[in-house]
Length: 302
Image (cartoon, rainbow, N blue to C red):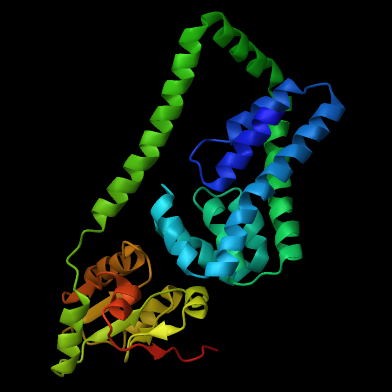
């Protein structure tokens, strides 16, 4: 049971190892032993929450900046941050429960909850509830299919070191697949970008490019800076915004993702809708501010 708990702890800390199969194995190993079943569930829940707490405190102390760090260290695509922000905007702290069942969201949810100053007692309740539900589901699968799992483990044991090599190879392939998935994702975003100084020159020459801020409402609350004249756009209401923009105007889209993931995706959507002069802003709002260019407080949204 300690092995399963350690794997869950490492997974929640951000190490890209699959925890679900280990929990399923724990369920099979404790079949017919109610005390051990309960212990496995409690230990996995505690381990998961313990792994999430450092991310929660990091988010609480460093705010939205820790989300940028998550994008850089996780092997999930950067869009997972936006997905988690959107879920939190719609569901509130229930997001912490849902995140345990959605790949990519589990690493982002705790620091986002901290950055949004969700109080510690509620964080612990919702986070533990999510861990307990996931643990219970995985352990239940192990209990239901314990005969098949025992058969598989017996055959693996008979294979000896070959089995260990096989399992290690599968884990390595899983991690390699996730890294490949991220690489392909980043490669797909290599659309033509515009630099912050080029955008600034366009604005000072009076070309009046349309600048769209496509960060989520949650992110705009965390980082209340905005490029002058930018329009805050919710992707759910993107069509309404597009109806107001002439298709012969230059359109620049920015977000706060380290790889401009959201901005690049929106730029591609606009091109499919007939906007030919649309580009994501390289580096987003942070590159603009780092270049010493003017930022203004974002208007409060209703």
